Image 1 (cartoon, rainbow, N blue to C red):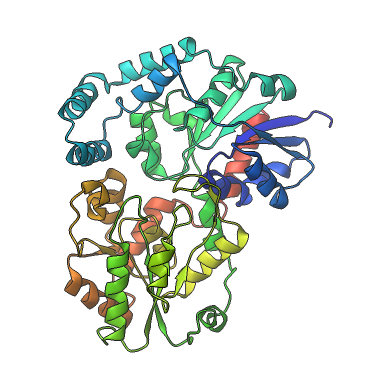
Image 2 (cartoon, rainbow, N blue to C red):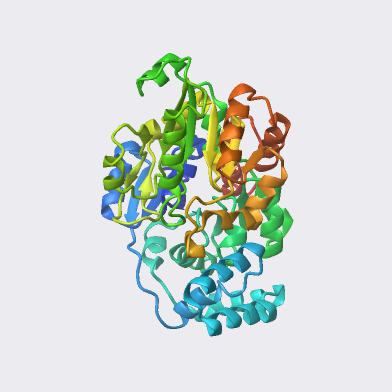
Length: 457
């Protein structure tokens, strides 16, 4: 290929594929006939899976299995968690302490945060990390392809830091992408910094400036690429959608979005409460429940068998045997999510980004701020997450109703079913603050931004 421009892109996590491959980002990059893309995955299974959907002749796949870190590399990997000072990290530390009662670990973490979570310390640590860690996992691929640009969609994970380190050694343009609204304040510091970072909105831009020490001129606000689909017209008619569940177009659909067993033991309690309320006439007579489980979690089949009449969606494919990052939602899954959001009448959930999804479609959102069976472990207490920094900003927009007990939940459901326009202005404010753009062109913006960098614009 004449004047070929080779771009490395990491798709180690399901959310990376969702943000980059299944949005206009990939299409925009390939619109330049000189671009060739190398996609990095963790396993041959995932590479073969993605090849079925993304098989353009200018796409190649390389498999780099995650390795066990040792020595100084492992030290810096652990250190990154101690250098972030945020409300969410404080919350996580308290939750872990309540679980393991490890006083030494808890107070050492607090002391380390107070002493070391300063910009000058982070700068020194990154300098030492770059020069002392000798990992050359990706050297062979740089030698083989000689890329022009490296696009990293999950900089908080160590394999991508190793990929970034090799790019920085060779002075190759590097672009990071913060692929979630919470990672900057809830995960860790960035071990190394790319040349440019792409973020969803101005909120995350400020966080990247404050916690990741990037210059504002090097932070590009794109909007949320996976939401481009939500701003399109790809919605099936209500009769067809409701008919999939044996329901009438006149029925009112409540969607309960589970939090997942990794964070909570409350899902089945709420499902049973809503099911019983529907059966006992505590909700409008034509109100029906649909449960949506998470694509990155595993559902207890035994619990489902206990509830044979339960309507539920269990989207995605999971590549591992436990909850984690190895999952994918294909085009049919994403379209079904869009149709669910478009046709549901109300969302009920704990702290979740799907609250923003619902607000885009102007659907009332109720967050549950109680537990039917109080948990002995704070790690399984879903109400704790309302104190996290990123979620508090969403609540401050005013478009999410907080139900403080069972009675409040049922009364709120009845109220919103009767008048879905309530809190509409708050939902609009939430969408404006979190989405930044609502034109359905965020993926295109990201692709064009990368192409401009590729050509030095």
